[in-house]
Image 1 (cartoon, rainbow, N blue to C red):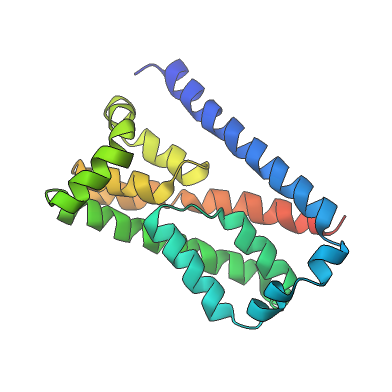
Image 2: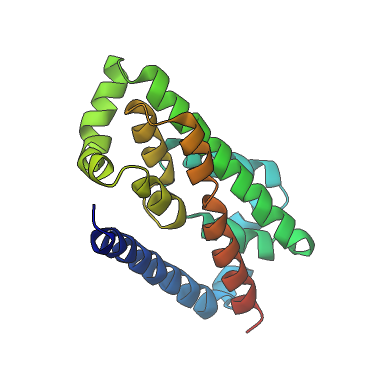
Length: 190
């Protein structure tokens, strides 16, 4: 595959990621000091139960990554553990990376079961052509952009992608957490 096609593919999904982050940060700035946020009883109810938030994040990351990690970074910054924000972002990365590894093994171990085949047909199949065309590059794009990382991990596991390469490429997930975590920290200072 040509470098131009790879860079176009990466730029397309990075653009989507930047747009989604911009929307999230704009919404955060607009409502961070609002009465709605200060008086939200549901936030107060979970703010002291970090284990529950981590459980929701872990479940989301293993299943599809439907809840953006940035929401958990914002939660970390505003609900009692902001003194350890950097450590918490690193912890969230480790959860995400471990969830990706679990997804990889789900894909590799259960790829022949009827349940996985139904999941594959309804959700993962649309990415298979891209993966075959872009090889491990799509895993990198999934790690650093809003593409569903766990789903990419399941797909590469089901397609018997090398586990050694998988572990290395998946480590690039830390780039997303570092950049987005830093941007959220800076926006909070505004």
